[in-house]
Image (cartoon, rainbow, N blue to C red; front, side, top):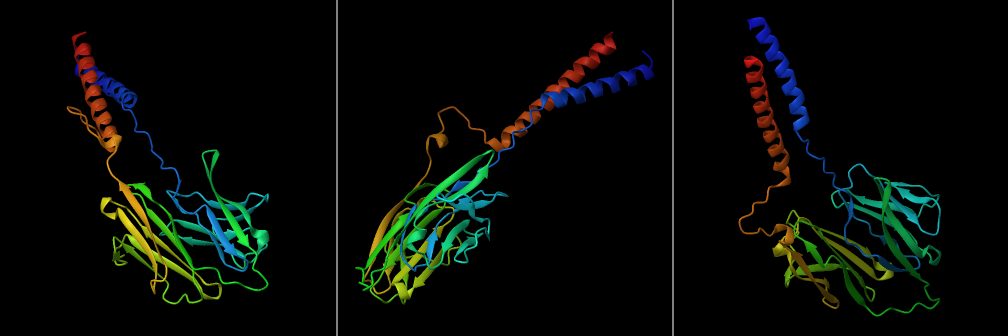
Length: 289
């Protein structure tokens, strides 16, 4: 075999190797994280004239759009941050850092009561969360409601998820000072980068509300969370448990779990080694024949 024929043979084998390499390498599947609704109240009660807020918090939204609609109506109320009905009372309170897309209805009326839906289109299907809005008619001779306070939101979650706690209080006229959050009897530290607090006061309607959000929750975030009115006349607590481990994280004796991120690398390395071996065998066979 002359040198020219040998070079041609090597080039042919190289081309074959490239084809085999493309056939052998298993390209890693692209994992797309689908949107998920974070825990939030699904029942909201207001008096006539209040500013009603319907909560919707979505993680892994990506380029998708959040749509609010009323189940009893055909068209949407809002798409993204834009209002799609001719009603200046309706808007969206959006916070990118907190993944919030809350529907706002100013000066709410009894006619606004009903079921509303926060929805996202995903792969030819729609993810939905329904929020029920109740609106009570104010009596012609207003009667003070007894002060009350309650917490709603996340109570059980996995490590790494987001804690969302909502505290709502009706007072007997004074909302100055607002609500204060405690964890295990110590005031929540707002200087922690994972923690954010937002509060809304409605002195004219004796209402105050607060939203406590803790990102990337870990086991140390488990405990008793207390929401307290500043003068200690109102106080309520809720227990939050951050779960760690689980069946997917338990290693059996003698076994080794390969992270998904390294699986593709192992596939490529194996395919490359296998292809090189095939090329070597073909070259030897060609030279011998």
